[in-house]
Length: 494
Image 1 (cartoon, rainbow, N blue to C red):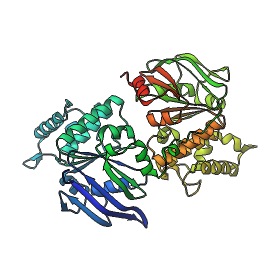
Image 2: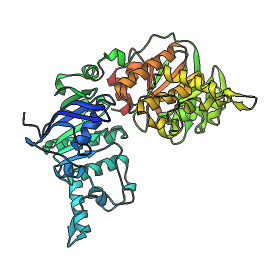
Image 3: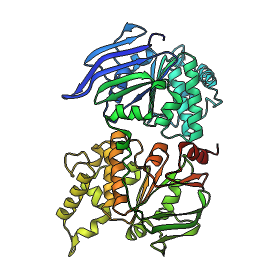
Image 4: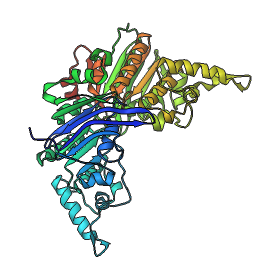
C-alpha cells in the first residue's frame, strides 16, 4: 500500500479541563475511502476540526505527504489541499453556483474579479463530476443533492488532495445517494484521499475501503473494511454487542388498537391500509420521498386526508387537528425534532409537560411543582443527560433532545405512539437506549408505529414491517421472513 497522504498520531485536545481527544490516530491513503465511525462525543468532530485548521492540537503530530506540518487555520488547510464538506453546509442561496464554488478564492484580473474566468473554471470542475449544472444559476434553484455536488466542486477548486465528507447522505434520497457514491469513486480514481463520516453502516459498506473507529476520545482500531463486518464495528464503537444495540424484548401482542383503511391524500399517498396491535412494534420502511411521514401526519391531524378512515379500538375517529389525536391517545414524534418536536429555548421540564399542562391547573392556578415532578421522573427514566430539568433543551446533544421529545409524548399516556425516524442523527450508544425504551413500551402494551429509513433498525426492532414506495404500500413482512434483500427490493423496485 502507498504511504498515507495524511497521518495523525498522538493527537490530544482539551477544552477547559475536559479531554475531547486523548489518543487521536488516523491515516488517510490516496485513492482510498476511509470511514470514520464512533458515537457522538467519541472525538470525531474534534479530530476533523484539527485536521481542517479550526482547532489546534495540544500535542501530537500531523504529517502531510510525509512532512510534519502545522495547520494554523481553515485557510491554511485549504491551501494544503484539505477540504471539508459538512452536513450543514454554508450555502449562499442568492449567489450563483460559480460564486459558491469560488466563494473564498475567486480568480482576479488587474485587481478585479474575473467573472468570465470564474464561470469557465466552475463549468470545468463540474464537468469532471459529470454534472451539467449551469454555473450562472442561483443556488436556491438546486436540489439538496446538487448543492452537495457544488460543495464537492468547491473542495476541488483548491485541488484538494484530502476531501472530508461529514454525513453526506443524511438528506439524500436513495437515488441521490447512489449518484454521490459514483462521484466518490471518481475522486478515488483520481488518487484523492476521502474521509467519510456517517452513522449509516449500509453506506459505509457500499463506498468505503478502510475504517477507523473512535471511542471516548481515543482511536480504537483502523483497518481494511473487507476484514470486518457490521457487528464488529458496532462492538468496537460502543463496547457492547449487537443484541444490546437492538434490545428487542419479548412482548405479548394483543388485539387491534389502530386500523387505517384506504387513506389517501393526493399527491402524497394513496390507498393506505394497515393495522397495529397492542404490544406490537410495526415498522414502516421506505426511502426518502416514499410518503411514510405524510401518512403519519394525516393520522395525527397535522394534515387532512382526502379520503379513508381511521379506527381506534373499533371506533372511527374524526381527527381534524393534532389536539384531537392527543385527546384520543395518539402521540406523534416528528422527524424534525428541533423544528417540530421541541421548543429549544424552553427548559427540559417545560417541554415535557407542554402537552399536559391542564393536568396541573387547579382552581385556575398552575401548580408548577407537580409538573416538575412528572418531568423529572420522565427525564430520568429515559436517562436524559442534564444538569437539571431547568436546563434549556438547546444546550443538550441531539440524542438527548430526542429523549426529551419522547418523554414529552409519553407523558400524555398514549395508546398509540408514532415514532418518525426516532434515532435519526444520533450515535449508536444513544440509539441503544432509545431502542430499549421503545421495546419496553411495547412490552407494557402500547401499540408502536416506528417509521424509519434505516434498514438495520427496522429489521432489529419491528415485529412486522410495511414497505412504502412512491406513496403506496408495496409489501408487508413478518419479522421472521424479513431479510435485507427482500425489504430493499420492495422499497427500490430493484
